[in-house]
Image 1 (cartoon, rainbow over the protein chains, first blue to last red):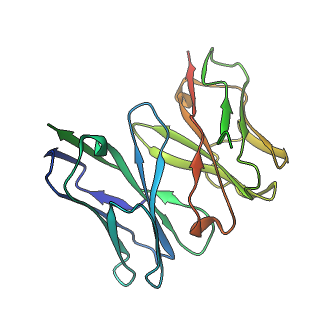
Image 2: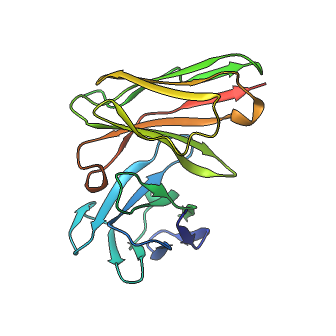
Length: 109
Length: 115
């Protein structure tokens, strides 16, 4: 089942902060975050593992609440380059990721 | 490394024709994934392989779709016969074992248009 992301879209000025949420109805082993710019492929940002380990981006942070099956991505002091569509990908007890509905982020000067 | 390579980058074909999409994963990666992206359905997993063996093809929409991975450096996704509703961007991605704990590297995608 596809995880649900909120909000669907965010508009920011440079320097503002944003939070993107990802919620699943299934027990999760890990949550991945990817960013996709228009006309390009998704690019990896972070992995959050069950138990608290994180791998990835040093300027973007995220949290993973295993009990609630939720993850949040925190974008602070946003830059123009942050614009794009953000996807969470959730992993249960298999090797596959199920990607969320996506959140479109636009950062303006 | 050149990253994941996909060909062709764009494909325009007519309904009923056979379409073959190709993917070369990153050398040394154990997992290969095929995704389809549309505005309506988002990014959907079609099938994935581990060590060239298909593990889960539950996302393959119909029997018209088939995928193979004859060796560690090559995979194909075939649609026969193609239909207009197959129009989408098809991505191939690869990762190291264990897939859930390692990032997926996506290829540039193939934009398929079926007229």
